[in-house]
Image (cartoon, rainbow, N blue to C red; front, top):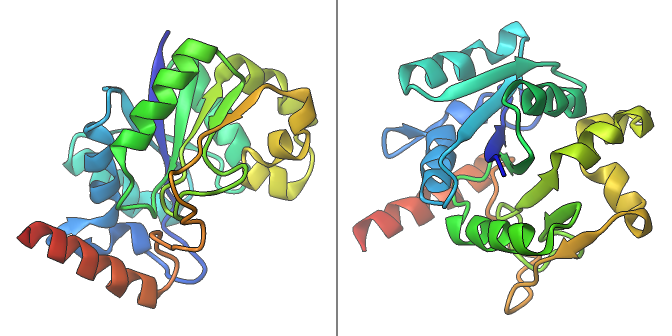
Length: 209
């Protein structure tokens, strides 16, 4: 079964523009995400961004660091994923967002193990969420994803690729991973300057240990 990690990234974030290219310890946030994903059991990792001119810094960063990437629609993120999984001939994929520099590879490994064993449509850890924001991991069966494209009609479903499945969860086999304790209120993703400085402090203090 060919499964890859697809890191979703765009440059033009509304609240903190260019956040994926902001640096902590001389490394762009996107590189922190990528390097953490590299520790997982999956060796195929792609950054999926848009063809839009605004996302050129992401392409340049990928080229510079020899990271494989895919360019698709800026607004129809579902279609972007759909085209990427077809291009890379994936049986399944892990969705990770580019603003999660502390993503824990152990959650990815746990999700992949369960996905391979149980063969569901989706493995998630956000339905309901018990892991911190910024530790979201979703493993999706490509066939289910491709077959349901015809149903993705609303703008928010095109932007948030699992929304349709979660809204219609009774129609799909979805397995949710639960954290040992509920940390759903904890935020480890970056949306604002305040978030950035908080994560910067965490990364710098971890580096000293």
